[in-house]
Length: 310
Image 1 (cartoon, rainbow, N blue to C red):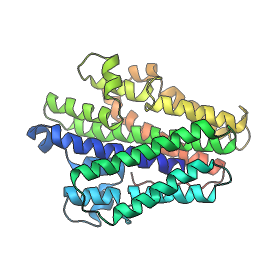
Image 2: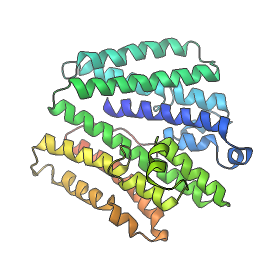
Image 3: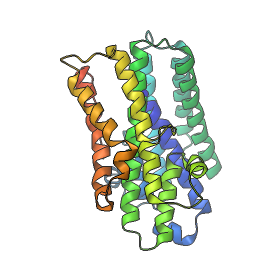
């Protein structure tokens, strides 16, 4: 439930940013960097999209990301999954949390009946998704006792968030790598910051110039930014300690060992010592570490891990 809630909110944010970028970007940026395949690679998979559609159009992409039943990561599906998970765990969660996702699920069912929306209606729809997610987060933080269900939910949320940031960094690093102009290189890194809602915070800490190394360090190891990989994994670490009362058992040692490795690799000093030619492999490894931890965690607690489209 927690992973689907986080995925719903973040995909809605990314789609919102893409629509805003279309309105604000120059023609050069639109033609060179503002393609919908980037959004598909981050929110689902362009390969899965092309298995249903031949052409890449604004209307088809928006429909695929919002209402498509064939796309397992569409907002219609992730909200439905979250609502169903909330229904079957109602004895373990606040009743208000069930009500949030049930009401939004019903709202979404009505929205699907009128899918040919204007741009303003799409923005309103995405804002409603984000508001519902923020409300759900508020209910969890203010109403849930800090016992096993709470720790499991926090791990799902922060692991999903860490994985998404790692994926965004990988996608935009590849686009920057193949950019022919420094201006476009800046555009890609600025887009990466916008996609994690980190532009405002980044420019408060760094000069008003995009520096790829600074962006990398900020999104991977900054301990004050709530979407950096290190920040997210610190919260996962705290929740794991809550589950296990800080003890390492015969069934949990592999999970702890992987967490130790991730904490080392997502450290600011570790990243600053990377050579330029090592950055690409580091980013790929960071994403793989997050995915691997999800599998190890699921194996440790006999859970069913979701399939990955990356």
